[in-house]
View 1 (cartoon, helix red, strand yellow):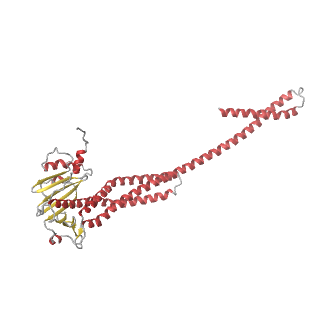
View 2 (cartoon, one colour):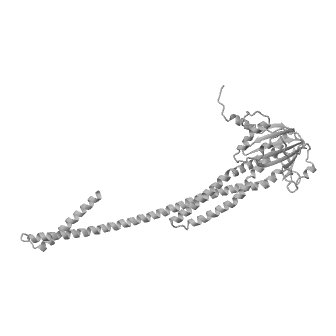
View 3 (spheres, one colour):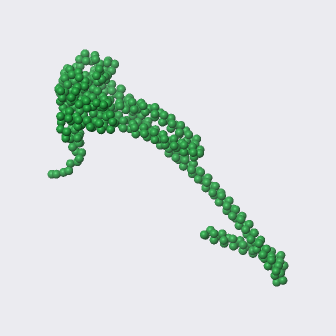
Length: 416
């Protein structure tokens, strides 16, 4: 049977098997560096794929979705992984390996990329962590617990060592190589995701002052909305609202990705800590509890700032709509005043027209009767009554005829 394979099927299959857990023999020292993109777009990280293939001595025409490369170099097992916005370089060596930046594993290719996380894990064969190893941690922040339901012990204080690595100590003598690999990978992921999740905190703190300024400006503008009376004042207030809306919109655009990524990394961090299945040893705290007490408030700060920005955006939009409604109402009132003025003018013109028509009837009738007076005087010998009586009798008829004539003329003008 022949079928057409979806273009993403191979990628989906590769993602299902991406980042496999490598068995880990003890004793072993594992180090990981996580590099952020220097450009922000991630193109510089993706460009490293081909160059890391050369370091790993792998064929350059391999699948583009091979986001994890594992190879051996100089007695070290090296793994390079490409994530969405960071890349990690992890290598394991004998427990006495003190070289924090070995040559030949591809570190030089990452020069110029900012390091967001550096982790060192010392994996021993004992069932318990040696007291000498515990004494190297700060007692004020020491996390000491059993992991994976008591199969191993883990300890850290999340402080940077002399090489600026966060140091973890693991005693996994009761575990097999695969289980040790799982424990190591979980701790590496926890430290990496912790750093990535807290990346939004400096941005949230920096944004706090700006948002407070935006809120004060909005409060002042809203107060002026009720005091504005003229069209110029309304236009000035509306311009201020639009300027504020633009600034808030830019702030949302600049921070939305970082805050969304912070929440995504926080969810991954919680998931990985839950999978550790820790139990505190003695009076010490667990890794999960320590991170929750420190990281969750920072993540909550980012979440609160994101909600604050969203609420501010809604308030600005509602203020614009409120001012728009007020301007529309003012325009309607102004239009009604104009219409009332036009109506009053029309009524005045109508009354004036009626007055003019009445005066015109009287004037025309007066001149018509004057003409009739001349006619009656010339024909007085033929008239049955004197001139005065004839004019008196003719006056109503003349007025009626003039009234009817003017009325007819007015109707003809209306029809036209």
